[in-house]
Length: 102
Image (tube, rainbow, N blue to C red; front, side, top):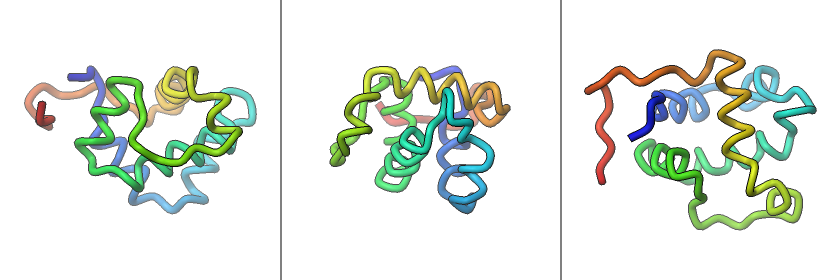
């Protein structure tokens, strides 16, 4: 299990208006529009538990990736983790708060 509250991150991405998420995350350097689009696409197609598993494993659900998304696929999760920690959105997990099915 990850050291971060990934279920809470999923809830934030799903329940915050997309324009608000973009204003918070996109800085055109580490987090581009392409990063944000892919992160939102993954959050929308997955349950909170599936999202957490993909994030922790640094892999992707079965979704269609565009050419720009395919190019940054290898560094995507590292870039996202970095910017989410910088912005204070990704929080340390509290043991026992969320259980992820194995």
